Image (cartoon, rainbow, N blue to C red):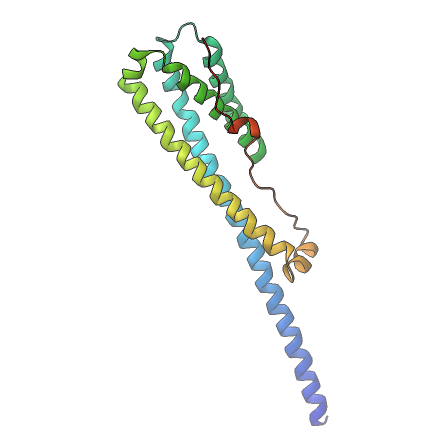
Length: 188
């Protein structure tokens, strides 16, 4: 074989190697992004479960003071049960939003019970729930950032070329429904 043939063979091998390296890099980037999304969701799930675990103690503390506020207490209990039985991130997020609204209503109603507001257990639980809410909000933001990075990876070139062949689809970000953004109205 002459020199030109060897150069052409080496060029073909080099091009194939570059294509394989690019594919390998993009494949690994997509897998890392998917794993980051799964990890981000796990962090949200941990915080929501922690908050759900605080609810029985809160309900026990509140029960003695708010005997005639059964509807509010039932909505908190139902929302907690929905979180515990959620199977998908969207179901869990919806149940979490329902619990957030129920807790806002509960704390708004608690304002009318001075003895309850002064109860140390209630204050401690309220503080822990507030901190957990902050952690959930941060975790949601991290989750959405992870989904954004993943979606950008699989929707831009050359990632979209490989992602399509890998069967990867864009993921949805967590949304807070418009109803959850409103301040609850409490009247007596």
